[in-house]
Length: 226
Image (cartoon, rainbow, N blue to C red; front, top):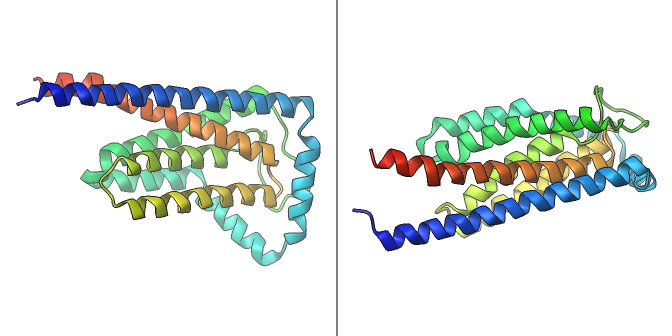
């Protein structure tokens, strides 16, 4: 038997969560377009060069191999395989598997569309790996941020112990920073490309989670009454 008070409280929490998600999308999109304006105006060019020149002395064959491996592990198909693995298990299929898979595909689509729309070139510096197409935003950063942010959101809403949640959050953030660093180190992205990717990825994650909550409020209650 459904408890009306508990059901009403749940709906209020969902509505509040939806507002927070929409605000997150809005803020991330605004920051993304502000960054686009700065990049297009050439305001960020000096900062991009300074950051790269501070990293370039670290270039070494051993570190280059590590950074190439990091970039490979951040490819869209690697994230998609991980999402597929999460879909195998019943406990992680709904909140983790399908949503992170959707976020991965959406992040890739957003990055591709944005690259073609803004047509911001990759940096003209030493490339340690080969890439094609435009540079802004970084597809690796966009997709990785979309996956990690979506995963961590549902992790924090799960019954996993808080210590593991904190550990996973720190690990996820460090991994995102490492991915961004690898793209700058390899010379195929400017720091602003990576930052733009993070903004886009967070927006995609929040939008994905918002759609998931809409599904919970609208679709599931209807199916449960049948």
